[in-house]
Image (cartoon, rainbow, N blue to C red; front, side, top):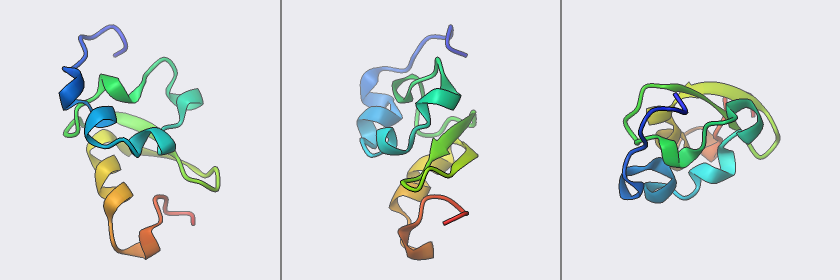
Length: 79
């Protein structure tokens, strides 16, 4: 995946949702970075909540979890 062409920066999740960098698990996703994905990608990635719980989700689910109003605004299912 890291060898594939990246989307234009203005279409990436890093640009459209800057908070995605806070939850991106850089260690488990290495060498992948948020700017390599569009918001509607179905690729599985690792996220990390503020309490260091890791969870594997699809890229398109990341934005929904960051901005959701239910579950007391928790990003992961463990919190």
